[in-house]
Length: 461
Image (cartoon, rainbow, N blue to C red; front, side, top):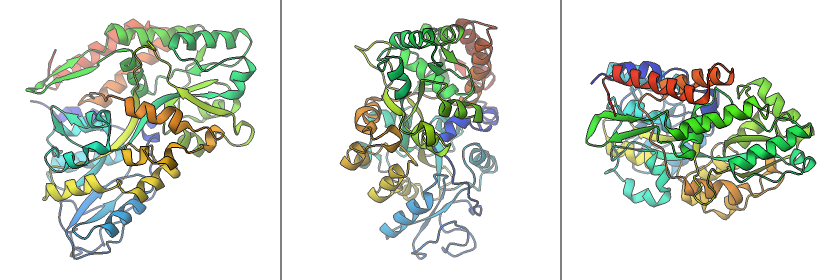
């Protein structure tokens, strides 16, 4: 089976939107020596590590990760363990790290024992046999710490290829001042969303939201919420994949947003740009459909300060069928054990245990680094009852994000996710330009991705 070309596309620069969920600390660090055991050239010391190893006589597991507070997380783990130590380096975030990992896979050496991966990138590396199935290496001991949806994102053909850390349950952030001015209550369905948008427009108000071409992972999630199932696998046939990107649900969602854009109810500005952030600050949009990590991203970008301080609130994501609600996710990362680890069992112990202690999790959510998926954090009254400053003291976790995270049932991601995202970006841009309809966009995406999958040696169902 031909799999190498898949990675050339999949390891391209990651979407800016996805990376916002797990932004880098921007620091530089020395490259790790590679395979498991003691870091090369330091006899188990810390010469090849960003962190200082406090117990250098213990076995060492190498790790790549880019969470902003990773230094603290690693220090916490090392201090708490007398059987293993972690040598951590940040080799870059997202696409930069993936490129280095792909180089190590091709060379057969140079990969760390444990690597941080965004959930939607795990299949890309699993299909190359670059990751270890850890289902028999301690997963059952911690399974209850995470929702079934979180584990589903880690699972491929029955194997578990990552340990969930953070996620991005979707919700609707909105400007309370705009809603109050135009007499709008938070819409609970997408039909209500469209009607509220018309009410605001007809009264001379701002755009109700934004539907962008450059956030394909979000757009995929919105299609899944409607009932789409983009990719399916046969556990007994690894070379077979089901691809359904132009089913009625996918077409319905694209037609819905194309219609709102054509009516002038929502904008089509690329997100994660200075122009879009300026629009958020200036009240050009009444709502922002985004993930649980968005408050941290927006705060870091200067939103919610000055004139727009205290104007934002959050409500559950509107539903297509309120009698059968579907919660979806955008973003999130995990720790995976690589196939180059010389001691997979010890590496799995690290993957399962790092960023899982109370001190690290608390630091992560209090500093808006992550939205945790660990139930020990989600059930913590301090987290649950937190009055979120960005939302003017609203208990957003209790009211919106925790229920959404716990109800999320998981996605099946493609082993060529970046190619799929790029194809969607191109065709959604064509749709928003008025060159094609939403249904035509879905048909073009299907044709492009199926052709690519077959070129990689897959049998497409």
